[in-house]
Length: 459
Image (cartoon, rainbow, N blue to C red):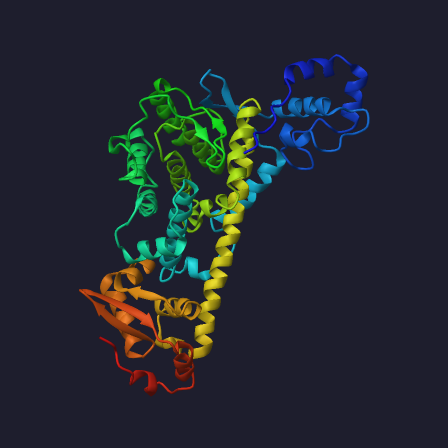
């Protein structure tokens, strides 16, 4: 990975700019004293390639930007190993995104009825938890395919290898986050989350849920081993963790920080400190979800941020690097994360539209959808898109967060209608779609239900 170019020393540039009145007037008249460039919070690594005004060097332009930013940057309780504070700014572009996310994540604008409806919302929560568990683990190197991993989580079977164990652990940790969202963050809770995400995946099992004992750890690009970050020394970790929990619980700083910014900075803080031998990224993202849910952003339950991060991992890493290389300015990471949230919301709406399209196709075929409940319609809609689908009582129950008996009743009814067949393997019962599912649904729609009902249930 190419590291961002280190910005020039702003102190020397500023001193020179302020000492030349004519140059200063030119910069002011050109409107260059702004924290953003065309509404973007650019790093020197990007600015140096943008076309500059005639008579103004990129260094002078950068000096003007830094002066404008210094007037709005505020210090955070997070400090680097030398004690220099990280800072965050709230330029207009950031405030605009926060306003939109406030509206979208707290449900003040219309969201799909299937998400609001208590009878169907758990189906979408489970899907989001599965997606986040898989993609967050894949970001950290898990190699299991999405289809195999989703089958494992829905069926409830045990993980077969380390990659599947990472995904299973993430799913377990995300469920814990949902239950404890109203609790204050403590070091003990951070340790418990870490234990959940790393169980049976570490070289030394004792490292699960404890601070790393040494400093023999660096963050590297997994592709080319470029060193990206050297975390603070282990001797600082205990007090840094305590300070992070105070920040998470809004005990610091003394000024107001928007809840979404606080959640994002919590994500940044744990990843920056890298307090564990492994599992730091997964733990950091889990804490982000905890903070968002604690602040009342209930739609976050339905989002997968890692699904977006995984599509461009270099941009995710660069958001950290921009902050570190530009005088600990965490605004870069905050803005990047807000963009990820926005894309996650759009992905959720697209997912709901896709699922509803599957169900509507099934309804159009059957025209007797009152014969099916929502769970059965979702299953049949999925089956129409994948004729090799396999279901079990456990997978159906886990997918919709219902009891096993309810799930069994759903499946048996579909067998009775001739839309599924059942096969007993050992003590387990497996359900498969019929080869002519679409035709059978059409027959139901035309009122020829006797045909499907007369089909054998299976063994």
